Amino acid sequence: MESNGMELETTVLEAIQMRFRDVFDENFRVNEPLDRYTSARVGGPAEMLVIVNNTTELLTAIELAYAQNVPYIILGGGSNVLVADKGVPGLAILNKAKGVNFRHTGYGVVCTAESGVNLSSLARQCIVKGLGGIEWAVSVPGTVGGAVVGNSGAHGGDMNNTLLAATVWEPGTGLRIYSNEELEYGYRYSILKKEQIEPRPRRVVLSAELELKPEPVEVLVARADGFIAHRKQTQPGGASTGSMFKNPENYYAGYLIEAAGLKGFRIGGAHISEKHANFFVNDQGASAEDIRSLIAEAWNAVREQFGVELDLEVELIGDWGFDGYETK
Image (cartoon, rainbow, N blue to C red; front, side, top):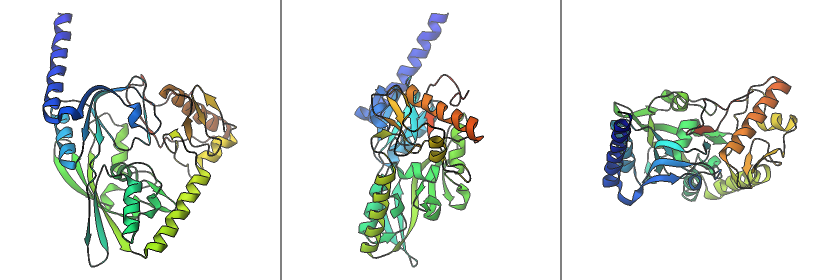
C-alpha cells in the first residue's frame, strides 16, 4: 500500500510537471538551482521553476499553481531573500515581466510598470525622461513587485510616497486594484508583506502605478549621483541579501550589531561586513546555513547586550527544517 501511495504521488507530480512544460516549454525547469537567481548567491534547488516574461505569463503560472494546490514563491531580483540549502518545494516563479509605459495627466505623469521591472533601471529611465519621484531607487536592488510588497525606500523616499495603486492577484478571487491607502504602508511594511509569515497562498503584485512629476534632468541626475556615491561609500559590494534587519525604533540595526562587537565576524564562507554591519556578505562560497547562523548570532548578541529584538527585513524561503531563525 505504501508503495502504491508513493507511485500515485509521483504520477501526480509528473502530470503537474507535464502541464507546466506544455504551457511554458523551455522556460519550465525541474530541480533548478536557485543560487544563480539570488543576490546572496546561495540556495538549493526549486522543485520546479518557471520563467515568465510578461504579466500574462505571470498570471498563468500563478493560477496554474493555485488550481493544482502547488505552493509557489515569486523571485524578482533575488534580493531581500535567503533561500535554504535544501531548496524550495513546489514552484518558484522567476518574474521577468518588464513592461513600462507613461501617460500624462493634468497633474504630472503616471508610470505603469510590470512587477518584474528592475527598480534601479526604472529610476534611471525616469531620470532620463525628466520625471522625479523615484530617483531614491537609483541604486536600490530588486524589482517593482518586491518594492510594492516591502515598501522599499532609501534616502528619505519610499514606495509609499510614489505609489498610486497596484494591480494584485488574489487567491480564489482574481484581480483587484489596491490603492495606496489600502496597502496600509509602514516602515518596510504593507499588508502584502504581513502575509509572508502566514502559511497560505499569497497575493501577487502584477503591476504598479507610480505618480511622477517633471523636473529638470540635470537636477535629477545630480540628486541620483549623490545617492549612488553615498551608497558606495557606506555599503559593501559583493554577494549579499541587502539590509538584513529592519532598523528598530530609535536605533540603526547596523550600529547595534557593530556595538555588539560583530563587525567582521565570520561563519564559514560568510561574514558581517566591516563597512556596514547590517550587511552579511558571501565572499567565500558560503552556504545559506552559514548566513542563517550569522543572523542568529547577531540577533542573540543584540538582544543580550542591549535588550533589543531585531526584526528580519530579509525573508527566509524554502525548507529550513524549522520556523523562524532559531534564536537561542
